[in-house]
Structures are given as C-alpha cells and as structure tokens.
Amino acid sequence: MADVLTNLPGTAEQAGLYAVRPQPLGAFPLPLGYLLIPVGEDCDAARAELLAGRIPAPWPVRLRAHELVLAGDRAAALAELTDADPDDVVARYNQFVLDPDTADPDRLRSELGEFGVLVDLVLFVLGRTDTAPDVGALDGELAAVVLSGQASAALDGGDPAAAIALLDRAIEAAAPVSAPLQGMLCSAGGSICREIGDPSAQQRLERAVRHLDGAEGLRVARAELHLALAGVLHEQAQDRPELLAGVIPHYHSALQLVLREEAPLLWAAAHANLATAYLTMPMVEASGQLRLGVAAQSLRSALTVYTKEDHPEQWASVQLNLANSLVYTPSKHQADNLVEAVELYEAVLQARDRGTDPLGRARVLANQGNVLAHLGVFDQARAKLYDARFLFEEAGDHESVRAVRGVLDEISRQQALIRTETEAEPD
Image (cartoon, rainbow, N blue to C red; front, side, top):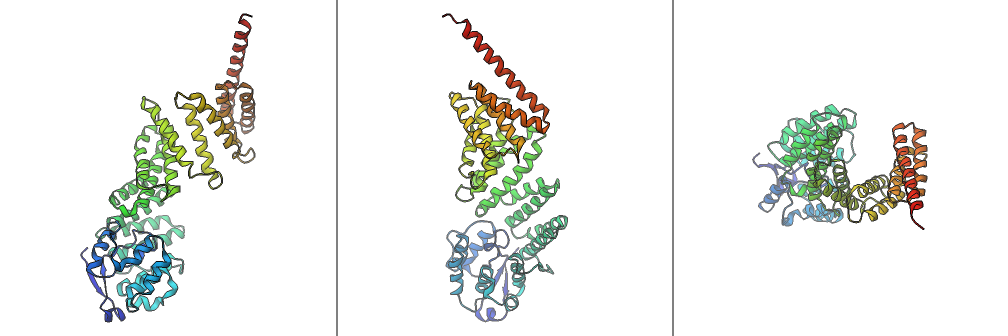
C-alpha cells in the first residue's frame, strides 16, 4: 500500500500536521501497537521498520515516547507527550492511548479524521466500553485492527467460529500492509482453533511463522508462536512418535529467540517441553543417549525458573522428569545419578499429596522404590513399593500393581541370592 497523506481537521490542519498510512498498528502489543507515527522524513524510516516488525535503530527524536513505551517506562513516555505542542493531535492521541483520562474522546475522534476509529478501539481494548467499533468502509491496517477487536468481542461472547471468521477478514485486510500484522492475526486464529480442536490450527500457526520471519522486534511473540505450534505437533505425536522429530526444531527456535531474563516462563516452558520430547523419542540409535543428556540439562535449566514456592505444579513435573532422565541416562557416574534421582523423587513426594493425587504419588513411590532396589537399599525400596502397591490397589490400577509386585519379587530373588553367596563363602 502506498503512503497516503491524511490532512487532519481542526487544530491539526492549522498546525500543518499530517498522519501517514500505512501505520504500524496491531503487530506490537498495547500500548506501542496502537500509537501513531507522526509524518516527516525523520520518522519515515522508523515507520517502515515498525511495519516490518523491527525496532528502529536509532529512534528519531520525535519518537522518544515510543522508545520509552517499548522500554516499559510509561511515566516518562507520558511526560514526553505532555510536553508536546498542544495543537499536535497525533501526540495528544498517543497520550490518550497511554492514559485515556487525558482527552475528551469525542473531540479527539473528530480531530483524528479517518483515524478516529482508533479512539473507540482503544477504549474497547482497555475495557472502557463493551462494544468494539464498526469496520465500516475502512481498509488496510485500520480495518485489520478493528476486525481484530470485533473478533475479541465475539470470543468473549462465546462464539469462537465468528471470531475466526473475523480474524480471517482482518488477515485479508492486512495483506497489502504488513506481513507481521498478518502473522499476529494468523497466530491468534491458530490459538483459537487449537482451543476448540479445529484441525486448521497447525496450518494457521505455520502460516503465522512464515509471516513473522525476520520480525526481530517481535521475538517474544515469535517464540510463543513456535511454542504453540510445537504443542500442536506434540499432541499429534502422542499417537505417532515418529512425528516428534518435527517438534524439536520449534522448541529450539523458541529458545534461540528469547533469553531467560526477557521471558522466563516462556523460556522455562520451552526447555521443559523440549526435554519431554527428547525423553519420549524412540531410542533407535546411539544419538538417543546424547538426547537424554540434553534433556536433563534442559530440565535443570527449567528448574532455575520453576520453583516449588512460585510454580509448584510445573516444579514437581520437571523434578519428576529430571529424576527419570537420570535413571535412564547412561553415565560413568550412574550410581551418583541414581542417588540424586532418589532425592528428587523424595522432593516430589512432598508435593504429591496422598489425598488429592494418590495415583501421582503412587507412581513416584514406585519409581523411587525401583531406583532404591538398583542401589541395593532393599529395605527402603520395599517400604516405598508396598506403599505404592497399596495406592494402586485402592485406585484399581491392576497393571501397575502387577508391575510393583514384579519389582518386589526381583528384590526377594536378589536378597536370596546374596544370602546364598554369603553362606557359601569359606570361613
């Protein structure tokens, strides 16, 4: 879409200010994604970069407020806009985005001309009104963000099919304007489809990945997208383990896009899920042992974020997977690994309550008992396994009961063998 100069009415026209389309709306999250870029050669390059999903380097002086918003300094951005020319309607609109109480919506809407619909959209997104604005004859990025707002309203109203249809219209409107905006809209549609079990989720998310390729300013959103796509593929791989190889690259992509400090929970989830994929891949070649080691390292990384105090459920799951990986990973220090696994299982048992999660507790006890048996600590192993068997019997899990009995029988054989060998030794 070619740049279109829009002369704003009222004070904006008197001050000689213009707005230029297309504007980088919608791709970046609120508030940056709803701020307007003023016209001027000093801002044109920055506008182009933002439309491409990239961060300007350097930021022009007149976009200092935008730079501060991106850095998370809302107060400083507001101060910057407050000091702007009172006749600068673009600055006053941007101030309104950061603090809707600073402007009269009716007056601002009138002064903004075709951009006036953004006033109502911002009020809707911020929860100041329950009704998304109408798209009318809008096109391009303005139509795309308004349709996206309507999709949010439809989803909130319990109509995901309508939300998806509105997002598809938004994607079409955004096509001539901004690939990253298309990508974010595709991602939203894919997420809804995944929630309702629509099989088009994978296709939509893959399309989003393509549209966002190279959008370096949206790295966190891209990482979230790779994680979502990996989740879809991982679910399919539950019945077809051979598909796991296609899941791994998306977890790696997510980890390449973000640092722990930028998005700790996202980073930890990528590590934890990558490890799960590695642990469940078929062991058909020597590299499988290497994967187990990588899985353990990823699980340890995830535990730097998932703490027992702040994220008990994720912490327990990752602890359990780490213990399992240590048991099955070949190592020159296998005995040390088994001892650590026993300790990890014990920590998990503190979080798996007998009353609320008896089967979960039983599985941990069974695993711990098995490891203790391998370490030759037979009395402790028996105690853990008896406890596990009781819980499995209570739950009617007969297959697990048989498995535990098998380990107990093996312990009995080992103890009998040790006694025989001891008695046969000469005095």
